[in-house]
Length: 286
Image 1 (tube, rainbow, N blue to C red):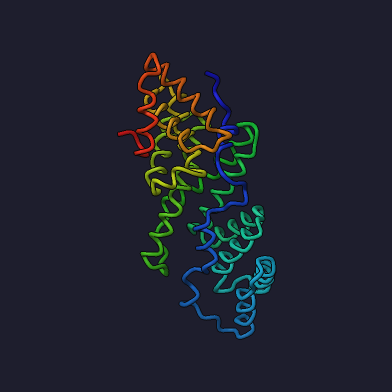
Image 2 (tube, rainbow, N blue to C red):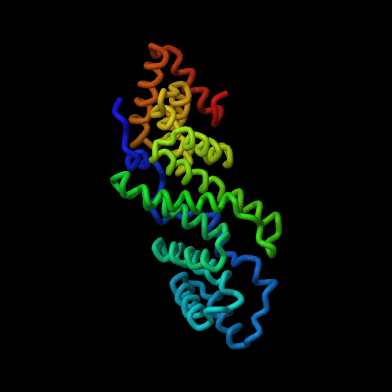
């Protein structure tokens, strides 16, 4: 059975670089918690701040925020404005500018979960567009390093615990996915398997049936198949589950891989239809 390159494994992920996580974009657009707790004392700065955040057009908003940050580089609302800037650039599908805003925010606030998660998500998506492991590796290394920081991040003093927990829930699957993909490219299959499973357990079951999380279900099956010795039972489970929900363009290829490993393990195809039913009832093997 020919092994498939990582770049082609990513083909069943939905979306392009433009599809930054909706929850994170919404969180960034919300403007953080500082707004009600920080007072801008200079009336002129406050007017410029109000003008910038009130812009309805993402292009006008990003332009106004950039002008504000140039004029007031040490403003007490710099962090909030950079969060708003990330959201404005994301709304324009400008991923380079989104990453730049995230990196600028991380210089001010190294543990900012929104900036870390958006940077990780985009770096991982950029790696998916590369055709060779050599080109993918530095992007995934950077994504995995920021993902580790995100998983270790602690609650900011000015953020309510409920808001922090909601943000952690939204970002953890992104972090686990990036670490797992970095591990898989380095052939650290146990690490990849552990982090992919943590990702799948961190989201509602329905979310594993589509998009990047479905793609990672497929990659998890591949990790089990590629380790030494291969774990064919788990490989069959996750590949069959990925095939059950894959879009038509990828479904046949994935199901053939699942059938190949099932036949190799079982010595025949009897019972495979039962497996196809079971994988729709549980994310992880019973």
